Amino acid sequence: MRRDPTWAQLSTARAFQDEFDLHFPLISAAAEMIPFADASFDLVISEYGASIWSDPYRWIPEAARVLRPGGALIFLVNDTLLKLCAEDDENGDWIRLLRRNGFEVEDLIEIRPPDDATSRYKFVSLDWARRWPSEEVWKALKK
Image 1: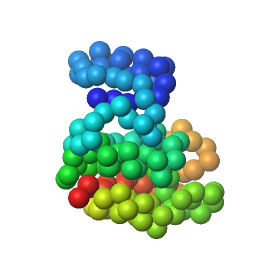
Image 2: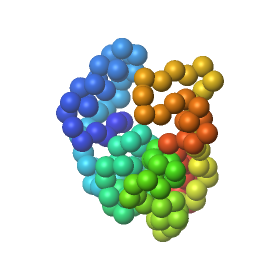
Image 3: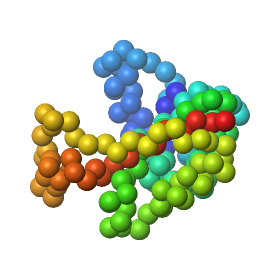
């Protein structure tokens, strides 16, 4: 199941489903009010969706609600160094919020480009990105 707030994004998702012959239900809903029963899923993932656009004090409790015990929450956010240059939630805030909603942080990965990567961005070189990653992947398990 994929939850997406806009029909245009769902249209893109449908095209990928057809391209890869991988079909599952698609719905449009806000991350803060997912229309599913408690303990419905083993995995909730946000790749720059709810994790950066929605209020974390509303979407994380909702993710906790729909996850089964032992289920995983995985989400991507901007890395600490990037957050130093812009107002954002601090890692301590994320950890406290996750714990308050029954999660245990299992991993925090700072993403770096692979050795064979190329870049189309002029504002950051590959050397810079390898030294100071700008993205984090958080993995938290529901207790």
